[in-house]
Length: 275
Image (cartoon, rainbow, N blue to C red; front, top):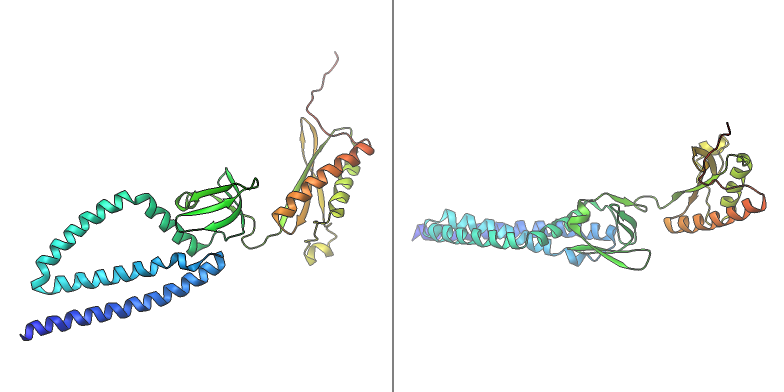
């Protein structure tokens, strides 16, 4: 009788300890999920299943300890664990892909490579604004207003370019080819003027750059090509959306200015030498 009571007391103590540990884990995991979800701008209730999973694991370990420590339960426990192991292997194999997406979604919460509203490029194929992040997939709204649903496991294996992770400002390149006969200085000056006149152009110079006379918009000769001389303007905007609109407007206005001032664009051609 004493031995039976000792076993009952032991089982109760193990369950109480498991309960306390699970409560402690739930508190820490809940705080972490709320903080991460706030940064990702998603609903934290989507990740509450992790707290339930922790409860399951803790009480499963407690049950194993009880069944393995009490001789009367040892045979029954071994049988149950063996059957559960086979069942878990079957279920795990059948749900491998879904589980991979869930784990990848959890890693997105931990490492936070992007948040809802960020403009991202996933690999070489998909670009747009992050619209939603779920446990299984991420939804990206592309520039044609289409929704791209990408499994989280796929995103975890791709290179992610985030335009708004820490600083939304963009240095937009304005590439303009001019002919070898064009006035390079005047062509560069026009690019600079049109960029500075645009409403989305901002001055992103540091105090050091201002002191040393750096211009808000830099224009440089970057290459000689078969088409002519490649000019590139470097102009800063507040975000990627403004950068795209600025680029489109500046290319249009530069074309008008070049036509009015007889500055030829570069175009593919070849030199023919007379013998």
